[in-house]
Length: 336
Image (cartoon, rainbow, N blue to C red; front, side):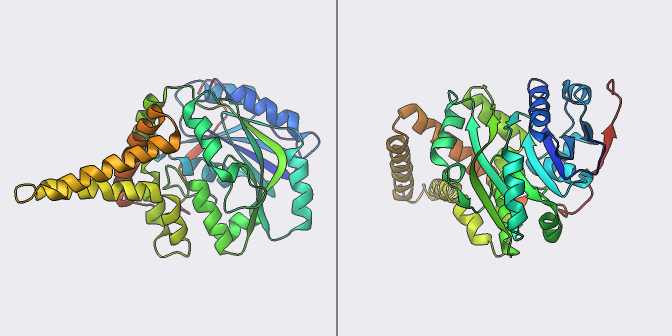
């Protein structure tokens, strides 16, 4: 959808098999933009359901990856950025709703603060009965902090000139942590990011049981993200930030290395193995106490282990130049 004028705001919606949600997302955008010159871009990671067909029917511009092999969390925003014409780019996932009033509030603030790169608002999690998303909201202070922040989780509106200043929007190599890495690059160039006390997003997350969701995240490469983030941070000012961000997985990875090493020396001594097992037991008990629930503690231990071991794969994956043009095409035929 476009107003026919040069857009002030490009709304980029990242999608992968979001046929159940995309119509609601686009309709919420329409209800929010009012008289603001805007375009709606769906950046699709080669959905195999009816996402593209529905998005076209809702009047959005649709750009799709040419290959499923290019899928990643980082590729979606960058794909939309390739085609966005607006002075500002608002980023959404295909399972989100945009709350009316947020764009106007953000644009008013941008007008007065020229070193401000991005603004986010409050996000309401609509699937609080799902333990993963409920825990994320409870633990992640970045969702609740207002004022200057290190990065924006859950979407936000970005000044395009700031993205041009740092060379690209999101890193196409990252299967997760792309917003954290983006915030680091912006702040390294002197830009600020802010979260305001205004409702911005409603998020409708997965209803998949958490162990099934963990398996899905491993298969999609999402769990490779910590290692990819660390690799992309080497030699940059934000390397220490990356370390702090993924420190839980690094601790777990060290524990698994210690256990492996203890097994190798077992023929000579059992003490290293007993020490490693004791360390795992202490870590597990601490997680149970911290989560205040045995089942949550078990899942956190398993999840951290999967992310930690997957980080090795992510760290050693071949990385492409982040500014590389993403092979894609505009879809105009609803049957295509």
